Every structure is written in C-alpha cells, then in structure tokens.
Image: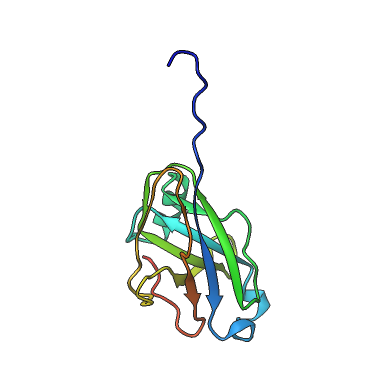
Length: 146
C-alpha cells in the first residue's frame, strides 16, 4: 500500500506451429506469396472485406508484424495479445498475393481439424498459450471469413 511501485503486468501470448500439407513442394508460385501472417480477431464472422480493415484499425485484431517464413514445411509463430482478457474468435493464417489489399485466408485454427469450424481461444493476463497449431492445405483452402 502507499508508494510501492505498481506490479509489472505480465505479457500474454498465443503461439504454435503452422504446418503446410505437402511441405515446401505444395506452395504456390513465389510471385503469389508476398507475405504470410498470423491474424487473430475478437469478432467473427465478419460482414465483408472492409470489416477486416475496420477490425484492425479499431484494435479488435492482432497480427504478426513481420511476414512469417515462406516456402517451408513448418513455421513457428508467437503473437502478443496486448489487451487481455481477450476472446479470440477467429485465428487464421493469411497470404498476401498482390497489392496491400489482396489477402486470402489459407489456414484456420480449429481444434477439430475442420477448417470450416474455427475454434475460439480465451487469453487472460499473463497467459502464454501454446499449441495453437494450424495446418495450411493450399489445395483445400478454408472459406473466406466474409
């Protein structure tokens, strides 16, 4: 009590591995894979493609700052959730294939393995949730989120 320093808040993360079915041989041509990012949304479903930008600018979505490794069999990721508690309703891997607005979802976190049924994840302050793993199958992409 009194003038004691405030307890530092612990950071919260989700992490896991993205695996690519068929390995590096399954990837599309390099000129159509400009970036790969992990994105997690608080709201889902989304109404249209412009709602994705709104979610990002309103702070209702999180994403990896840099592109994740491309043309690999597997890639590990870690994503900080800066304002827990947060219920993440849609966690996905996205591919930028053209200009800054040309993105598509290529993998979705689903505990059942069914990429049409995204799973939710609750992140509380100080959580470090692991094994939020996603499989990407370039020959069987999930439905787009809008």
